[in-house]
Image (cartoon, rainbow, N blue to C red; front, side, top):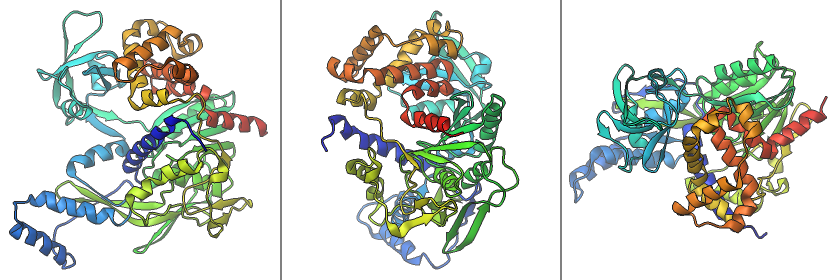
Length: 535
């Protein structure tokens, strides 16, 4: 099958998103962890002897700590793709999305033209409290210039985050104001939300988008569910696409809201861990309404637990593409120096008994490149290309055939949307041009865009003009993506929708990105179509 040249970029994008999402969203048995204490048990004498021998006799001086850490990394990565070592420096950053909060000043930012620009001050956060606004350019932090010095995201975070109660002084440039405005901000606890959007798709069909399964996700979900039910929701779409996982218990709690008491949700079992079953309890605020779960190749771990529980209990309809295939459970154990290991201690099994972990015997690179194999086999475009083994066939109580051994196959397959794609579009996406330009335009035209008063007016009345597309092409050319008017015309519908969605996000918040994008989202359209067929 001959495919357009833009496809060469898809595997790179898939790999980056998947590795990051699954690393951050590893499934844990619970939110707890333990400390690994020092001490010689005798089991590790050979490794210790080798490290000591290298330290004493190697031709050059070695860094003991670095050598030990690299040894641990190598040891764990040869077990399976999800057992890993995390340095003390990385641990806090990796845990924050799952803990649901961090300490800092509370701003979303972007770096454009070597300048830190505030996308939004988080509602109720310290920055909003002192008057920091979207569009402000942070020029100085604690008297030191951060504009024009090629600062990266990590450098910004290091300067703005800090222990709650400590103070930081920032100086910002605001459009329409002369000179700099100084703010002294007392850092505080800032929430990290894992539920990106919740709104009504139709008069009775609700939509909830979950980005990860964190400590706060269940509470966020219940608030959204209650809000939608008050708006007349009787049918629900839960979007798990791109959700790399998180806490197993959080996925179990949400599944419990859909299943009647006594229904199996998942069970875990390992060599040193006896079987542990999780069942639905008496609670359940959405046990009867029609349910649709959206999944794709970025849905992993806890996402697959929820999807598997729904599918195996014949509770709802899964729509999209085959999920990632992560059925391994990790336990996080911390060392006294603040570093940690995440060790695979069990597999999880869906209610019919299937393990959806895909093979990993050929190593980490082959494991993650399996996404590329799916693309090359045509699986992303046709359900007929999905390879399944009869030996891994299971049957649900309702008689539906499901499969284990490598992700969850949806009940309703929707192919990857390749309409309006071009090499030029891929180059714009890969270089971040559309994202950056959307922020640039939102910042420049903030007052005009705010004149719409609310998202509803904006969505109804604002359209991407030909002159704005021309401005985007010029912006891309100035930033390394050669203009291509012919391919711009091919990709025009896709670019218009994405650009409007990003502008909406920048002005009205992330929850108002999805209602714009859904106009071109074939998976959501399939859910709407199915909801209207069923009575």
